Image 1 (tube, rainbow, N blue to C red):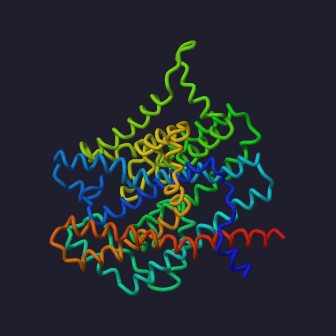
Image 2 (tube, rainbow, N blue to C red; image 1 turned 180 degrees about the horizontal axis):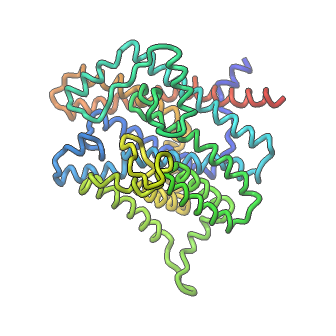
Image 3 (cartoon, helix red, strand yellow; image 1 turned 45 degrees about the vertical axis):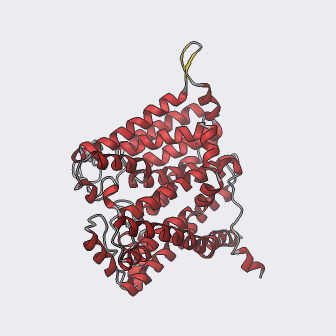
Length: 433
């Protein structure tokens, strides 16, 4: 009984209550992720950069919808934000223990794999089982009847070997992350994000170990150089090291206190720091809006301005437009947002609300469950309703899938994610003995 109880209770987290605002920020991205996934299926014209939105009339209403989409259900900001936030948080236990022992560092790295592998394998198994029972023909029927050009029928995994390889590759692919069966087989095709987060974990682990042994000023300058070079080669390390730098500044450099004093302009004259944050955030948001509502044909031009190191000695002129990209506009929006979050007492208090913290703790489970619910229960319900009002049908599907996703998330969290966390501790303790 004691062993069973251990696998039903989450291991004690190394994060204390002072970091609840980071969990709340993750919960905020969970809300955005649900809105994006749902609207891409049932109202794709309201989601910026989708084929339906690009083909919609360029009226004032549609421009307004695209602007709202950019701020509240933008897939680029969601997946980029999760990558940066992961880097911001996974290094906290190491930094707050003053470097920790060799064993603790090894534990961080070892447990990271199991706590991601098991939930992903379980979610893909559930998705595969549904695929074999439904064949996902309802997705194609729905897309055609609704004129939805923005969703794809998930790839059907035919046997156990393909399933095993799909899960295996999700943690080994290092380029073209979205071009793999595990991603295509999962509803919504967003599983690649976990692949990037896992791969970038090692960038953080290898970089963070130097922090206790180097000067603060040199760490800051070195991180900036790292970010610039990672940007040049179009690596996701550009986002990850930024997240690590935020963690270092917050924990070791009194960034919040210094930022609240303002930016020194001349002698005793100081400019409020939030003015700089607004400028950074606005620069990214304006770029986003221009590419969505004014000149969508120029949206990918910035991707050329990188070194095409994997296939040429020149610029990145032959990139794959289907691949999710580490983008300048997403980066500026997120840096502006993180600067506000790291330095504002009011914003940290707001993000630390119980609902967002609850969602943040279950973010992985919610991320995995919501797509399955929306692409099965949601679409099936929409096709069965027969409501003459499209808005009415969408509203019913929204509340039903939201409730089902919340319930499914709790079940998945209790039965899969918590046991994976406990198993990671048990397995590491066993191999260490």
